[in-house]
Length: 327
Ligand SMILES: [Zn+2]
Ligand SMILES: [Zn+2]
Image (cartoon, rainbow, N blue to C red):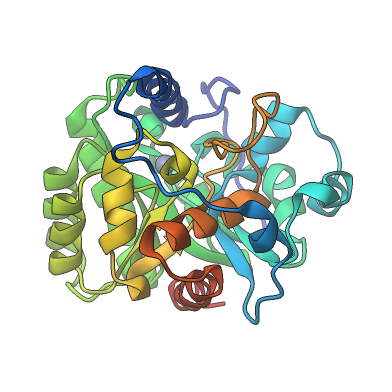
């Protein structure tokens, strides 16, 4: 298999700085929240991580969305993911079973060594797609390298693609729309599942997906941070959508995410870390980056919010991950 090479004008920085912005806002909100005198009124129900950590579940969990390339970059880790797991053994729970590694920076599509070493690991599957932050970098050459990367055996989805209208994304909307449309056409033609990144752009995103995909298309709306109103809109418009919740749910101030985590039907829920972003609130402030094992915190917090067992959350989310990523 040959991979075309092209020169890239991208910087080597990671793409998802919108996730970092959400984290910053969250920490700020969290600080002011804890200063409020009425904080006990609607406090987020606590979860106990130790029982979840050592739980012997039948299914275990797969982190449905992480960025191993960014994680290794941030931590300056050289070696394989197996090496990483050995080094951080104490922080991977018993139930960890694998992860979906997303490669969304277009300049990496043709740089095989960056992603192949991750996808060749046991229980690591992949997704490729141009993130809306990089929409202006998308061209015919990138598209060609994307199509080729998608043929790699352990690739299970096209994404993350979508729209991001948050203030940190400087790509003009029209360009984002064009790039999203082009990639959705590829997904539909090749029958690839899709991973959607949608930030402050629900209406346009739903409209474009409706225009290009059948109503029953299976896709993952990742890192959902919006309201229950919008979650319902997505569920109604696309009955086979899976909605991903990250460790944002562990923060007292993430009220919208708590409501979604409580109300979403369990057969539509996915656990994800979006690692290296969204470190669980309970983890020491000294830990700057999250990893795929930390999806257990999402499960434990959701179980506590819904007053059900962690096992039940793992059962459903594992099943949903298998369906979504055809594992
Ligand atoms: Zn994203
Ligand atoms: Zn992501």
